[in-house]
Length: 136
Image 1 (cartoon, rainbow, N blue to C red):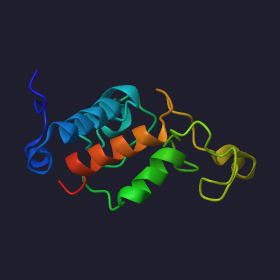
Image 2 (image 1 turned 135 degrees about the horizontal axis):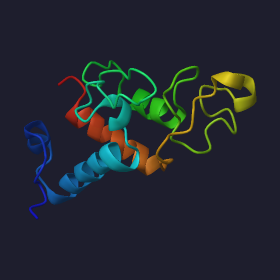
Image 3 (image 1 turned 180 degrees about the vertical axis):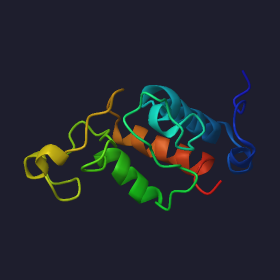
Image 4 (image 1 turned 90 degrees about the vertical axis):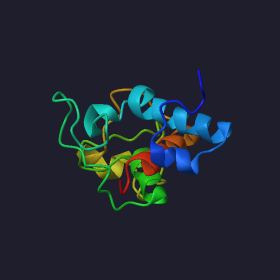
């Protein structure tokens, strides 16, 4: 299979080499499969997720979060919301928003319905979201 197959036109402009294409593909697989972000955020990142998802997720095309903020939200989730934390160690210490699970109590973000992600995977899915959805 051609390594650039399936990339959006915008991604192709930025991603001309095989290594970049593989990183994009990795982020795509994380978004659509392993992390299953599409369940809540929709296949196209527009917030039109599966009707069985826990709530209306934000439209990723309209987010104002930058890369570091997206990494924080995916790592730590959103306290008091349905946005899960994808770092399985989140809230064991104060690395997420300076709070522990004990301090947040019932407001601790849920664990993902899919699986946890490594820091490398979180960065890859954020790079995919930035290249594919944010501002587009």
